[in-house]
Image (cartoon, rainbow, N blue to C red):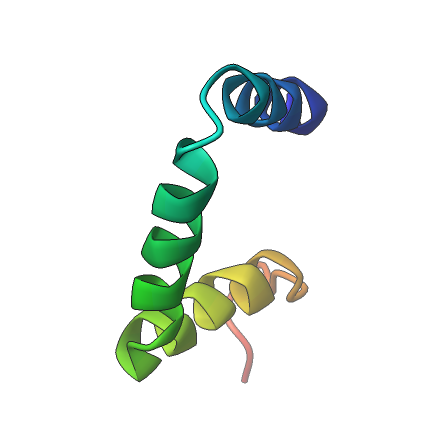
Length: 57
């Protein structure tokens, strides 16, 4: 699924070269917000943490 989405993005960039500037501006806007970057890193880290089942005493 990830490769399909990457192919779609690359295909759109080949069809519409102006999208590269728009995409770069959007990425720069998201990266410039520390709260969004921290939230994204937290979501990514949570997916890789082991799950503890049951109650620990």
